[in-house]
Length: 83
Image (cartoon, rainbow, N blue to C red; front, side, top):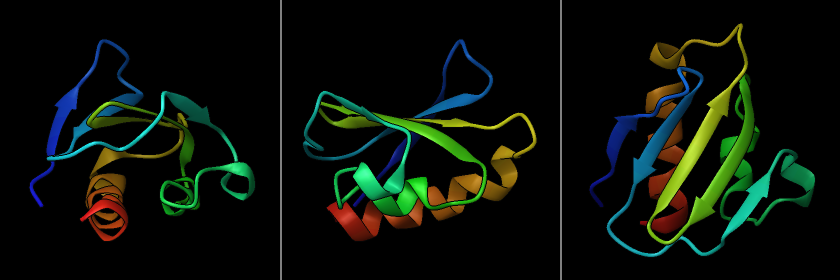
């Protein structure tokens, strides 16, 4: 599965576009109440919220987290859930 990562106007958010539908629209801030397919992303240290709709997921990170540390684990989690 190919996942394209794009910046957004918010420097704390990245858009991850997938090859197929992800569900939604929905926003989650807690893994325990999230869609099971998106919960692994919310479990990553530094992820504060996830918005999913159509064929993309927008992930927001905390101020302390760095995209260099989060991008690959997010892609891996999305690939495992939606691939």
